[in-house]
Length: 93
Ligand code: SF4
Ligand code: SF4
Image 1 (cartoon, helix red, strand yellow):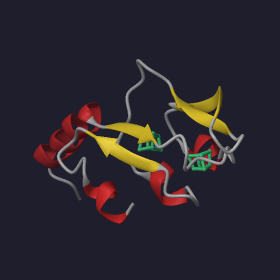
Image 2 (cartoon, rainbow, N blue to C red):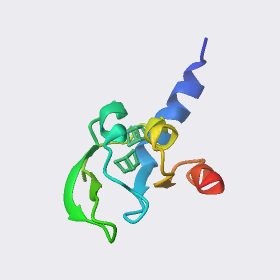
Image 3 (cartoon, rainbow, N blue to C red):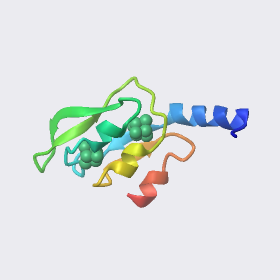
Image 4 (cartoon, rainbow, N blue to C red):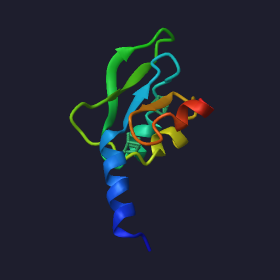
């Protein structure tokens, strides 16, 4: 069972975290769109240098920092800014 202070700390971390997509790694499969529980990720309108439609990060929505998008992306296109462990994904990508 989580203590109250742990829940609070997780909430603060999530509010500060934001995903960033490398446009030239994305191949427009939209697996991340299907797995994002907050509907922050949507199909975009921009093509990258390979001709793929790049996923878009919706502004104004709160990322919970669950990293499902990062785990599911087959092309390691995600990094994160902010959050207490905001650079964790960078280490593997
Ligand atoms: S899962 Fe990765 S490659 Fe697929 S749309 Fe999302 S960012 Fe792009
Ligand atoms: S970390 Fe979770 S909530 Fe944030 S964009 Fe990725 S899947 Fe969505």
